[in-house]
Image: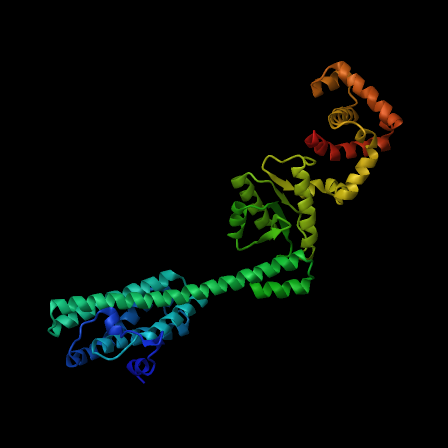
Length: 415
């Protein structure tokens, strides 16, 4: 069955009316059927020439390309030329089938991993060869300049429509593939955050085409649009928002590189875990999130490059593993200070912390604190009255130091 027969057998309707004939849509002139018949043998050679040039000049359609794409290109060019010639000859063509075929071809190219450059190059070759051949043939067959011009305009419109349908199929398929891939990557991140076991993780990784690293580093930072856009562009990493923070999961090298890039570009603090097994990622997220909180609260000193290596602060993470429990313990240790006014509490706490750390004299402490010697002596007498012998017992001193370091930042903010 010829292309024309296919077109005649399927006259689709739109809103209860037949669509406009392809010749009317393209504005093609009516040419005597006998003249067109004289061109038909030449159209076969045109098809061969277009196909040969596409295979030779477009890498995506070369001899090493997918044989299905080879066959598709051959059939697409053959059909397109035949439909155009039939339309010029006055056949009642509608373009529906050829447009549908080109949409499929574009879809298949997207699924095969080709890019739009190959499609555009092939379209350019087909348009160039077709217009050159039609112009020369029409002139040789005695057609007027007006007819030749109308044929050229119609041919360009036809080639543009073919490319647009191929482009639509390409974009739709690429969008679906991207959506499926992103859904799979999201599922992988959820599985890691849920503490899924090794077998379950491998199964999810296979479905989303993500290579599951043997060791993983977690990066945690503040969630905002700029940071999210920056990390989502990296296909080697998984990223998403968890408990209002941006979580990035990747192999150690990728995670560290992303963290430094993000911190350097935005000035945002980023906390990095140490390498863990994939099944331990959910725990690493918790540790690293706690590290970022301690950094933001001032309990951990901010690094100059804004990248916090949590492995260097494991003891501090252990101390603050349960914030509520830690706060209760600190309040118990520092109970005498809690009875003071907020401003008085901070002044005594700063003096007590510095004295426990250095055991310096009142003048030395006063110089560090920026107050008068007598003020420091008064505070020290008050502290000894509140805490008594606990200030001189080594085990009690350690507990007091730890509680002060944990609490003083929040006390300062409350003043």
